[in-house]
Length: 335
Ligand code: ATP
Ligand code: LTN
Image (cartoon, rainbow, N blue to C red):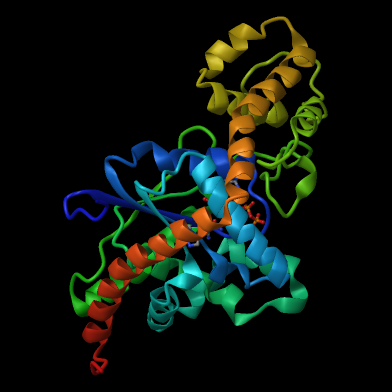
């Protein structure tokens, strides 16, 4: 049903390093399910990546399962998308090792995420944190995808993946297909509600709206959202001078489908007092069915187990095929 030679392939993953938030939804997951009939789709929980930062084992297990339930609740139908857990498919770690040997120290040193995380976790700058991009390249290249839908911050990792694939193909012929990052026009970079100059992120819970937040908490976070100290106080899109308002407009546009011009017209002459609760209300209504469906799914562990087992089996079939080809190309003697 799912594997079809003629269909284009789409693949992405998210680390279960915290609870999913509005940025993850609007920048990534929301766009994954939309093309499920047209594409052969693979979406996974990147648990191997998550241990680059210390995790509590029980929390990690809980988050992986919650994230799977959230993928489904956000509209990813397990019948149409292959949903799986990265550590269930050993080919990811196996190809990552091979690709490590085709990835340069210098290019890894330039990765923004590595520099940020190394600065944040000074006591644990481990080798995995440094080689994170070659594991991500393995995740991608195993499935020969056409598109990798991610938020803006992951673009650099998809680019290094292309560099690694190019280098490998240059030596061994056309082994890997060249993947394209697929970055949404609206929602690719949702900013924190409390500090609109930094991106909304689970590691900064304050200005972050989690998918499982109660409606009253979501509403409160929007009412308190930092707007701008300009005297004009009107709803107008100006990313540079009014980053707080621009961010709220991006969120409102992403959840309602309204253009920035429509939004400016809707709140003309009304100031921020009306605008902020309206954005909050629209987000509450977007998140309500997702939260309720996640809770329902989490109560049915047997169903979730069935989904991730079937997903791992389908994913491993495709991944192992690519891995065998790579092993042969580099000269490993078959067993
Ligand atoms: P971190 O704790 O590392 O900051 P995060 O909250 O940024 O984590 P990731 O797991 O790195 O989340 O990202 C998962 C996906 O969601 C990626 O495709 C990423 O580009 C996207 N994403 C994350 N944050 C945002 C955001 N604020 N706006 C839009 N997309 C985002
Ligand atoms: N680094 C990504 C998660 C990730 C990923 C991938 C995304 C791991 N492997 C492969 C796309 C394709 C992040 O969201 N931080």
